[in-house]
Image 1 (cartoon, rainbow, N blue to C red):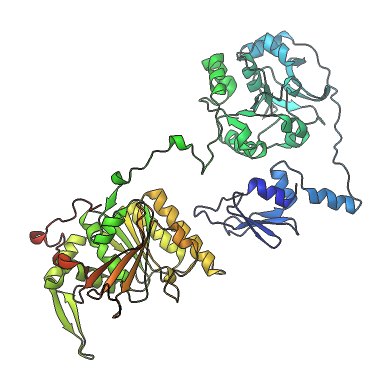
Image 2 (image 1 turned 30 degrees about the vertical axis):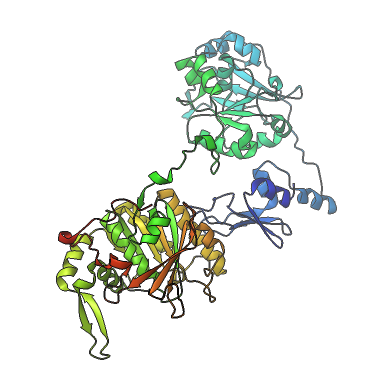
Length: 584
């Protein structure tokens, strides 16, 4: 097998760059906890593999990678042939010499005590070596190894515990009982010969055992042809860490689509034979299941989505509530528009109804200091009638701030509901995600704001578009896996027509909202200050819907007709709930 053939089989998604073939996810670390993409590659010229993730760093030759999957690397044999160094790999094995006899009473009695009958021992070819049991390993009719098992409990001798099993020196490590196997039928693989005998006692007939401990996989190479001939495997390994590790390793070697795993209760097969009986073993073997394939699901088992019943929050912005359904869980919403168009302002205003409905919010603002963001949000919460003039003594410019009593009431109303990324924090990608996760797990924040994409310092700094793409994909997985709302502010490109940055940012969004200032020559919206356009809507499909809004310089509110008079929860005596039901 060469690198291209390997990639077609084992890479989920491929990118080719010169001699490099990149996989979407690393075969060793699977992208880590952040599911980093395209960090793993194989080189068709150098015949190497490498993962760029620092916490993984897996690397080596393509031959070593093939060895892991029980494959042969074509280039290696070709290299050896061209350099007159090719020798068909062989190993000299010493033919067994122990004097083996038929079953004796001591061996029969020992196995009877473990629930295994003489009939099963004879059928499996178990012999005796003195007072001990002998398991013989045959390949193509030839005896290649003897393994001895004490037919009693081990004892302390000369201060050391006896070995309960040992192999005759020089034997060939292959699977036990291969000579009686039909490879066209499912083959049960156990860790030990006594476990295999227990399966045979229970009525299973196609059973093999590994020759030694779980860390010794030399039998894979020695039994290569037999292993490849098996059409389906059933792994009945011990119920412990070593067994789990062996099953995981064999799943790779045998391929998951032809390997089932037995789920059982006690430590091993023999213990279950003695405790539960033969029927239990037959039942768990019959119920052995293929491992669940991550990322693929039977559509018939998927719950259908009724958009009318999905969890949602009104935004207080009529066009978004009516045509996009408000904020629907989960969703990634992109807010865009020219600089100074008011996208951050509108987004801020939508948070007030989220707070009113009892949802908690996390905010990363890469451009506004926390104090300025609070001024903006509190002004929108306060409304025109609760703002007072503030005149700058130097410039004589008039601005507006909420009065002191109003600030105190809003503080009480908003306390414990909004958490903001502090000004002293770094803007590094991992730190933002760390605190987002903390806000979700500790404070139950379910509404997240990233304002804006261009202020984030990405992990991958060689290609800005790829870095943005990876970051947004991390955001998408974060909100999808935890059923959250995330609002991402993204600037448009220089033409002002499309979102700036990686092309697949827009593909990740559920909704895309464009905020524009009305120009003097815009006859349609000449009586308005701004417009909001829904340019993408995944749930309902309404696109290119546009509506005009007025803007209050005092309260920073965007409003439609009489909406500017609305009160929020802090002003309880004036509160009129106008968004109890969604308008869509």
